[in-house]
Image (cartoon, rainbow, N blue to C red; front, side, top):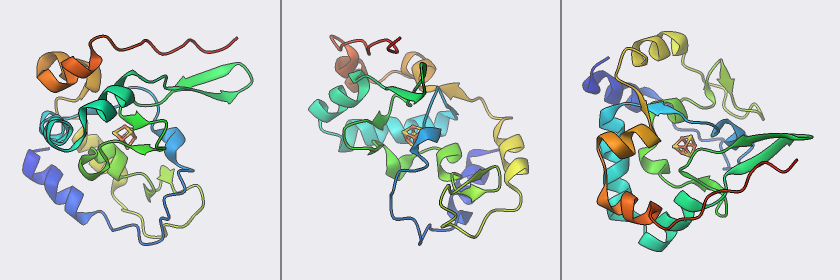
Length: 162
Ligand code: SF4
């Protein structure tokens, strides 16, 4: 998949008119998602331009642990704002996040989004052909001074309570 094709898919994803931002789907913002280089460039630019340094530092260093069942913990994406209960980079979120609720394999938990893209699996297959990396990998491969500064001196998240 080329960058142009990726942007065309972004544009084809219907606007979620019925989404009221309930965050029922936010549990899917877990783990280390993998994104393309052009997506990292967009996110890095947004981080450097649009997020106040204090907010960025808080988001990048806060504890992302959440309990999904007794004794079973998961971690939210490093860019999920635990206090604000939202994605810190929502306007420039990557493809997999844009597809939430819009493909059959990641439906809206409340069933509010009716229209789904029929070719979701094919889109993911083509997306997987790109050089996808985690945020942690992009932080190293294509660093941002702003991100590095926010991370330096940050506190480690706490371990999953036993
Ligand atoms: S980039 Fe945003 S929408 Fe995507 S997983 Fe991270 S917090 Fe969630």
